[in-house]
Amino acid sequence: MSEQARERIRIDAPIDRCFATLIDFASYPEWAGDLKEVRVVESDASGRATVVEFRAAAMGRSTTYQLAYDYSAAPGRLSWSLVTGDLPRELDGAYVLSPVDGGSTEVEYELAVDLVYPIPGFVKRRAEGRIIKTALTELKARVEGSPRPVEED
Figure 1 (tube, rainbow, N blue to C red):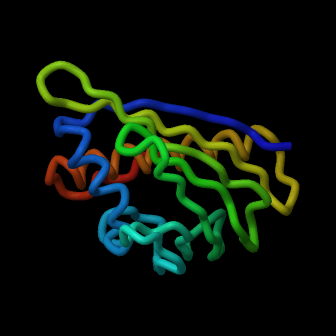
Figure 2: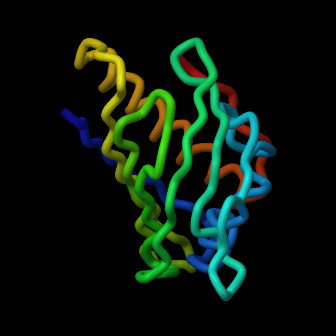
């Protein structure tokens, strides 16, 4: 059974800059700490990545998975769904971008996860919370031009 989580952060940049950072998949390993390798597998006629393969650190091991991206509500929403993966059975989510006063953007991260291997619910919820918090703080740092934030446990 999948668990769903969501969290928000305010980024001091316009939606277009946030969205451009989100779809620049090749640069993810530069700013997304747990990602070791990213490869665009398929692109659409506009050159946007539609299927992307990721190799990431996950729960003390390396995992590889492919996500299919949906641009139908861009730039206000970038959603994805799992195509294939060795650890996740479900890894679906979205970034929802909304303008806020002063030219900033509120970014909400939605994530639904289910793993091939059963783990206790509290462990999975803690991992999801960490994934979301880390993704949002690293995205904020990248978009705002700050160094990668220091991880807290």
